[in-house]
Amino acid sequence: QQQVKQSPQSLIVQKGGISIINCAYENTAFDYFPWYQQFPGKGPALLIAIRPDVSEKKEGRFTISFNKSAKQFSLHIMDSQPGDSATYFCAATPTNSGYSTLTFGKGTMLLVSP
Amino acid sequence: SQTIHQWPATLVQPVGSPLSLECTVEGTSNPNLYWYRQAAGRGLQLLFYSVGIGQISSEVPQNLSASRPQDRQFILSSKKLLLSDSGFYLCAWRLLTEQYFGPGTRLTVT
Image (cartoon, rainbow over all chains, first blue to last red; front, side, top):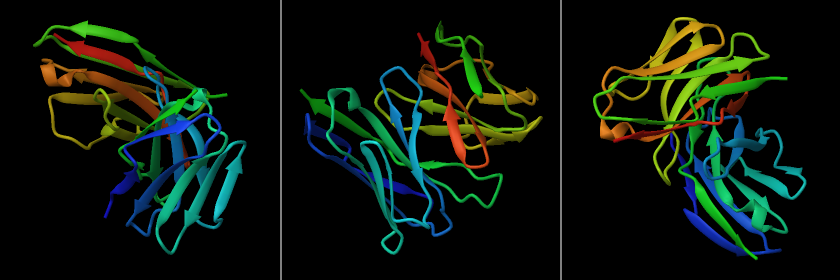
């Protein structure tokens, strides 16, 4: 019940296309859903996050879509660029406890071809 | 603003040698602190987390240990390294909801 399932494992998108990464969770106590972007040899960087009181959040070319009833959320990268090539992790956590930890998906390696 | 430091950036150690990795956070007080390990091309494995000085929770039984001697200092240690301890070690801090990672330490055990 603590798992976050992320798909696909890897993704190749042409420059200018839309990259879509999906995550699903089971724990209904989760109420904070961040996405991280990691370049090789670097630590993951917080990219964008959403709470379940909204169905969508957009920051620049990055959009999170959230479906509370389906317990799914996804990251959309519009107009994908080669510089977006990285590994993306979704995560989830309940925020009503200071002892909570983030549950991460296994990651998606995105390659944007020029 | 808050910053997180990890050192060393890279480390090559022989099997059986001790290990000490250090993480410090600046610009915040009483953060939750975390140690993760990432094997090559793999996901993030939570090793330890701490909600305060001297308070350590272990997620994975292994030959590693963690300590938090000061509010913003988190140390990962081992008395004898194994080949399987090789990986990318990441420290992270969190206050309320948002969690931020450090730059990581690449450990190679030979």
